[in-house]
Image (cartoon, rainbow, N blue to C red):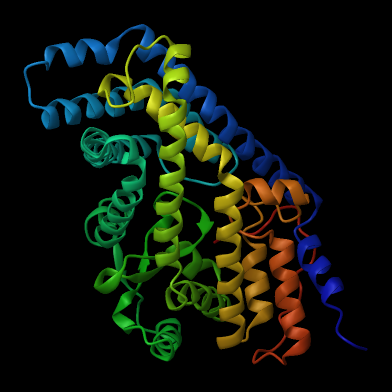
Amino acid sequence: MSFDPAAATKAYIDSLGPAALEKAASYTIGSEWLSFWGVVVSALVTFLFVRLRILDRIDARLGRRGFALRTFLVCAAFLLLSAIVTLPWNLYEGWWRETAYGRTSQPLGDYLGQGGISIVLGTLFGALFFLGIYALIRRAGKRWWVWSGGLAALAISLIMLLAPIVVEPLFNDYKPVPAGPVRDALIVQAKEAGIEPDRIFMYDGSRQSNNFTANVSGIGHSARIAISDVALKGASLDEVKAVTGHEIGHYVLGHIWIIVVVFSLLAILLFFLADRLFPRVARAFGSDATIGDPRGFPVLMFLLSLFAFLVQPVQNTLSRIDESSADAYSLRTVNLPDALATALVKTAEYRSPRPNAVEEFIFYSHPSVERRVRAAMEWKAAHPPAEAPIPVPAQTSTAPAAAQ
């Protein structure tokens, strides 16, 4: 009897059981609506700051300060105060809802403490970046938005370079993978890809999330592959090898640099549109500021949040292409299609495996689990796997822990 990729894919997805699939769909649809409501919240915050003239008052107090200091402080004030104003929304979105769906076990106090660190970092880095934007508006004239792409590329590159060294250790503890069969296998994979074995880490991802995740971060000497302790504890050796192969694919195929280029080009487009639309939108909110005036920063931030929402299909399409190519890299180099499939199925608790085509196109940064498992099964049909077949699990009422 010949192997049927479609039947195998269906069996893997159906193994989750109807209750888990229904819960996954509910969580996913709710997350998609949250992205829309996030724009509404941004509009309300902008309206509040403009009508109460909060930045006008702060700017007036700083009137005798130099351009750089005044601009930095005005931007920092908005970023900090808006984070405080939207804390109830962020608390619902990032902790209460995640807890309700079983996606996190993080205590509220720890969530708030780490959120405070994020606010401080976001305020400092955000204010510095927009100081650069306002300096471009001031010095580059009408074509300032052309130069914004270069500034965005520099900012993204610096963040990627520094994140594994400075930022990520503030939130998690990164250690070498413990000695044993898993580490031995990952060292072999790393060497085959030309990656130093000491660049593969495990981290306490269970602190924030119950998701089965791994990621690649950093550039140059700071680049590393990190695997959550959830993945190491909740996966077979073959699943860890398959997922690590996927992450190595991101590294080897240079997806980080693709991100830098794409986001830089998008920055040019978004700031160009902001330049053209700012006067009308500012008047609609009741602001008399020009785009080069930091008092209009709330309006500029609203425009960027709106554009970021509208450009999701473009970003997500490019991301899905990268994810598919990383899956293909794992299949080519590790050749564990069943292990990759079982690992992917574990993502279904936070990413519904069977979205419709429009939903996937707009909201999904990864191809649907069904599509990815089908690709793995088609690979299996065409290439004999190096693994013993993993039996498809029987239906259960709840899905296993989740994976990236």
